[in-house]
Image (cartoon, rainbow, N blue to C red; front, side, top):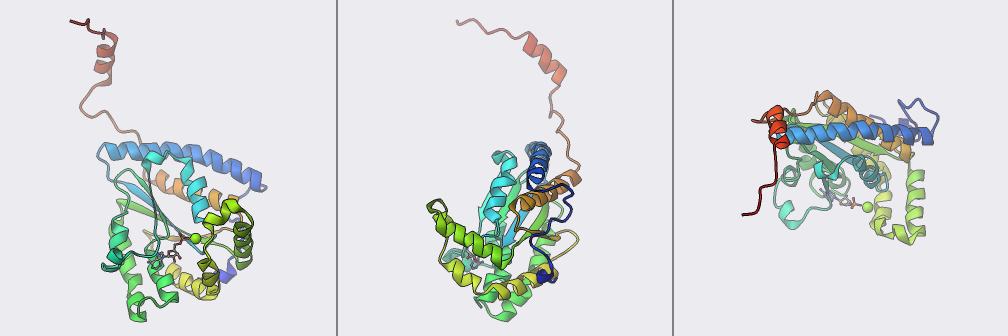
Amino acid sequence: VDLAAVDSRNTPGFAGSGKSEGRAQTAKVGKRLAKRQEQLYAQGRAGGDQAVLLVLQGMDTSGKGGTVKHVTGLVNPMGVRYHAFGPPTAQERSHHFLWRIRRHLPGPGAIGVFDRSHYEDVLVARVHELVPPEVWQRRYDEINRFEADLHPSIRLVKCFLHISPDEQRARLAARLDKPSKYWKYDPKDLDERAHWLEYQQAYADALRRCHTDTAPWYVVPADRKWYRDWAISHLLLEQLDELGLGWPAPDGWDPAHERRRLAADEPRPVR
Ligand code: AMP
Ligand code: MG
């Protein structure tokens, strides 16, 4: 994995003419996504055990929140389980690093969204030496075993939102320009930015070592927000389509019989 060789302004797979066509296509995909999600949710209610988990990773300002808004926002929030992972609490630190991850996995019928994830434990933990090298080194295999165990009940879609340092500078500047964006800014973002190359190396290793058949990584060029949304909405739809979902059959009742009952129904007089 050579991230420097991937152009973050690129739009692989997109055949249209640009932003407005990209946004229009994403809206169309959204309709199909919404139907599939409703089927997934309905199947979950009917005892099905399938779920999908979208894992979003990327540098600060890479668009994790924007993806949640524009892609997850295309489907019914009832069926979405979103969680953002920040620095672990004291309680979380007292457990294995996967403990807090397991607690937020999507249940049957849900689409889980992880805004950061267990991968932070081989990213920030490595770059800032929060644990000794031998500890983060063995985490790649632990992650692979963990993700293999989730399969096939939980389908993973792991996306690395790939932006350039210049794009990050522009987005940080935008956050500093507008009071309506201050809430997204954290002075620590600039300290993290100073470690850009170490993070790219850590990301490259995580993508390489944890890219498996059942839980592949996708590098999503993310300098163009419309393309990021286009790509991730398509990846999600692809996974949902592969589940072969349909509408659940009635459980223990007959629609024809219920229709007759309804037709004969009269409000009972008050006694
Ligand atoms: P944000 O996504 O902007 O809300 O920032 C969340 C912060 O939590 C980032 O600086 C992450 O690096 C940090 N973080 C997330 N997971 C971990 C972890 N396992 N260990 C240490 N820091 C973490
Ligand atoms: Mg932030």
